[in-house]
Length: 184
Image 1 (cartoon, rainbow, N blue to C red):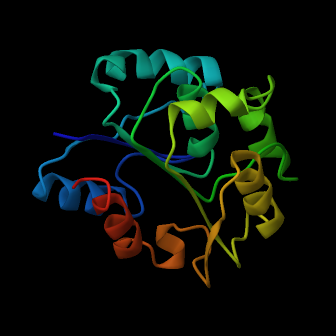
Image 2: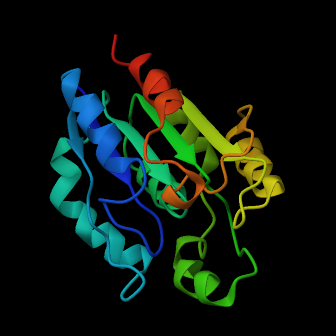
C-alpha cells in the first residue's frame, strides 16, 4: 500500500480546494491518505509544522508520495532532506518572498536556511513542479526557479490560477493521473 500525504498551504486547511476529492480518489485505488492540519496563519512556522508532522513520520517510507500546495512544497522540501520517497508533486510552489507582506512574514521560516538540493534529489528521484501561467500569488518565474533548483522541467497548466477553489479547482484529474503512474 502506498501512503500519500497531501500538504495544504498558508491560510489553508485539509478540507479546501481539491484535497478532499484527491484523498477520496486515491483511497479508491488502495492508498492510505493523510491530510494533516498545520497551524496557519496563527502559529505558522517551519518548526511548528515539523512538530505536527512528527505524529506522521512513522508512515513515511520509500513508497510514500508527497503532494503539496503553495507553501506546502517548501515544507516538503525540508522533509525530503530527511526521508527517501517514491514521488513528490509540488503544486504552486515557490522559494523566498512573494511581495505580500502578511504572507511573506508567516512564510519566512520556511526559507531561512538554504535547502540541501543534492540530498533532496537523492531522496526523491521523481519530483514534479506544477505551476500556472496566471497564478495571482506565484509569478511564473518562481515556478521556473523551483524547477531549476530541482533540475526538472516544470509542468505549466494554462489558466489554473492558484489551483484553488477560487480558480475552479475542487477536482484535479491531471494530478490524479500523474500520481497513479507511481501506484503500479
